[in-house]
Image (cartoon, rainbow, N blue to C red; front, side):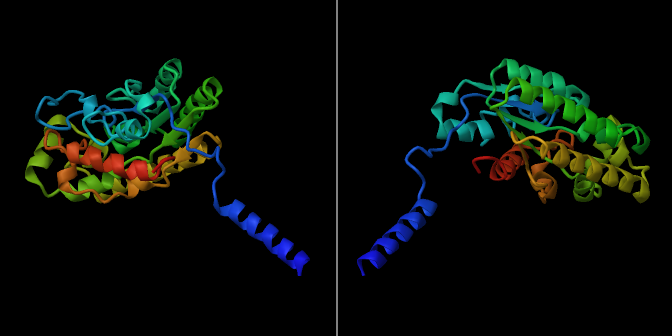
Length: 268
């Protein structure tokens, strides 16, 4: 009987050990972070109030201070990161620029970096001028490889590219949106009024390939976390889109993007 009691105590101890965290298992939060990407991450055209045809990084889903960004959420969890959020994204950037942006993030000592890149590789003059998937993949792998070598303990979060076809689907019957797209030549490969459905589907196919490249390359690094298509699968509404250019996220859209990506991140 004593032997049976001893065995039961050992088993109980093992079970408790499996479900209870150890005393030193507290979550470690980054003390600095940086965002990389393009105009979406720069908060471009987020609102008419001070953001007309200009960057408004305070509304960035990643490092903004006026939305519930990743940075704002991390400040609430770890005040030590306050004042150490850097936005290295550049409006108009394609994947070719990611290496330079991640180099800046490394020099800033970023413990956590977000990547949202690829819309400008798709939004070109026509479907025929989009960035080839092989080129996109090579540029991404080179950029991530160099950053990981420089900051081996840092965490990287890679977002999928927002669904550009869904943007067209939501707003293509809006006369003001159509006029804006055509007047200013916004993402003509997808949004030009003269496009046929087959031409738009070429962009859909290339976006699928580029998102696949993001997932595949990220999986090659233990320091990298892919969003599992969370951004791409988000069903956004017209109110999530800026009425400045009918392309970039509005403030509401930036908050939605922040929430969706945070849920897919390391701490969501």
